[in-house]
Image (cartoon, rainbow, N blue to C red):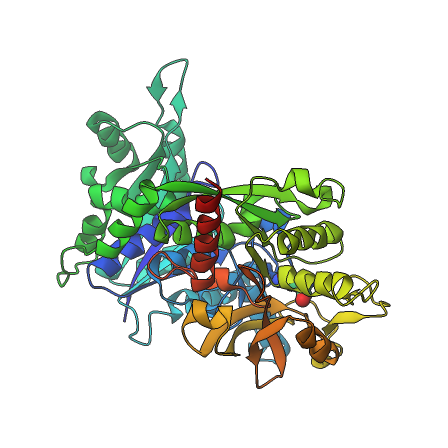
Length: 537
Ligand code: GLN
């Protein structure tokens, strides 16, 4: 059986529990152990799939088609190992399971209660990934902040697990904030003391306290925290603000978080941390040879988390190309045929983002037209690809009012249509075309040049598709459908060979980009933008 590490947070939210969990897992992986990370979220939604990106940022989709929290994206980007539905559990899912069991009569007439029935189901899921021998370590991030009403059953379950498992098989890492009071010129430990006290009142005792801070903590402060919070002196570590999240594993290595964990869990079989690939990436990231400007055309640009995986993919692909990718956010609602020249000037590439619904749609189409006519490297993802198809239909095929039936159900030219089996679906959650699907790439295409192979798998999250009724018309007029799902007969990739770099994909390549394996589409898109920037210079 695996050993279990729980990561809780105190004082405030947004301290970066996900990054600390991912960094710790990375270090353990670098030492030769296998680790996975899961997130338990306290909200009632069964998964974040139905949440507005403004509420919760991007919805991250796993290989098996689970709609999950964006922290799972960090886990995969750090570890390069896939997660699954089992890695993200919400209160809603727990209750749904328990209530379904109750309806099936499985509780045999008993009163169903938070303790033990809800906590038993939480426990079953918290321990699940550690039971088939696949992982040495299972790290569980508990969403929310200690003291929240919603997370109480999760924390209670951690208490039970800490009590039930041998001491060397379980530990708790608590992340807090040490604020700096400018007026007093002092770092303050009181909020941390309170948050640890609150955690202790629930019966959970942290083994390690990781302190987020803008200023280094001296030994006196660490000792004080250790004393008042009842942890070993060496087990209070600082997590200084970093210039990039990808530096955090190195900061944690310096603080010896991995060694503290290995000692507590009594793991003796490990090697020196091998972070060679990681360090090569970081070195390139920190020493770019040029800067390029990429326009990100979207409708959620006020909230950067809405495009988390795309932004991280730019960072991976930028490092690979040794350039800094300066992302210029362009609100699709503000973009019109009249102002497009002015708005998009100075860019070296254009990415039209995924999305849902009508808002900002015409702006996206205007942006595609601009990129196509001005030989600007273009990359459309999901809705972005659909907009490239619509733009081509309207302006090259002269199909007036061509649209997606998502935006205009009565369009005369539904070049993007709903899949047949989607038409029968009425429920919203988990019902899109989700998860990994194979795609066959045609030789002598840009897509083939990018992937270097004919068979790929990429992840999906959409309801609408290229309408094959129009396939011939598009092909005859110069749009190449270079990637096809042959099982379902669906167009997955479109490109324009006369253009230096114009590609749209129905899937989400950003979901598979990791530090050590950047997504090829992003790498080539950034390379094309880099080439344009060099030409212009
Ligand atoms: N709204 C479009 C669809 O459902 C695109 C979805 C997306 O961009 N993820 O097909």
